[in-house]
Amino acid sequence: MKPASPLSVAPALVPWEFAGLMLTYWCNAKCAFCYVYSGPDRGGRMSVNDALAYWRGLRDVAASAGKSMRIHLSGGEPFGDWPHLLAIARAAHAEGLTRDGGFEKVETNAYWARDDDETRDRLAALRDCGMTMLVVSADVYHQEYVPFDRVERCVRIARAVLGDQGVRVRWWDFVARPVDLRHASPDEKRAAFADALQRHRERLTGRAADELCDFYPGQPPEAFADDVCTRAVLGGRHVHIDPYGNVFPGVCSGIILGNAKEEPLPQMWRRLSAEWRNHPIVEPVVRGSSTALYDAAARLGYETRPRGYANKCHLCTHVRQYLFERGGWERFVGPADCYARPTDRSVHRRDVALPVVQ
Image (cartoon, rainbow, N blue to C red; front, top):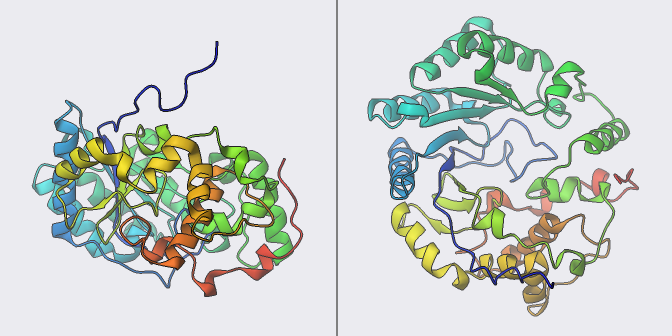
């Protein structure tokens, strides 16, 4: 029997149950794997009032379907402005938004964990606001920038403050065998990345689409035609909201579903539920994966990448980079913090022979 086409089952936008508030794009690091383009040269700052408004709106979206909303605070690096992070957590707690697991976690690379007492005080303050988990980003990419002793300190103290179940590390196997790449040569970094990618495949969006794509064999756009994005975009139950109010599908930063500063989130969800087929990025990737988005962009002048594409996310990101630079797509593709600037291109990684991950 011939399988049903991807759209024959009338895909629908599911209610959102998980959301990340991206307080800023600023980060002390410029990790090669970054799903956006965070770094010291990026910015944005989500106000306390905006954060509370988004939190309420997201809660109402979930409640309308009989669900509960779980929020995490992220960036960039949310600890880059500790008083501001704490102010948001305390305001949400005072309003009752963090009850019953509503404040799921905070994500950090632990660069700030220089002192035991300060680390303990900060984590205890967030715990008292209802935070149930700390997620620490530790891997070969972050350890280009963050001394590993700070990761170790943060994990150790978080376990004491939150319990073993209240701590998650991005790569536990890396914690067992850490590698310090802060002073490594380009060749040493490439070798470490290639080894890591044998064990941990990365989502190739944002900076990762530039920095890591050539570690994988290149494929033509048509290779991804049957790998549609229905689940990721419509069925993921997960969104992120950036400091400017842009709402992204959970794993697809840079695809703008709407702006929470301009449209209440329950209203946005209802509009998208009824009209997602009118979205010029969502519709093609749901109908025909990033290959369909490529076809649409090619009619506008997009040229195929000579080296091919590592996967559908790389193809989608590369096409959206073109649309972003072309202009006129600001409502659907952005902001600049999610896309490369000319100065972001890492020649030493992009234009050399790389070990290929099979």
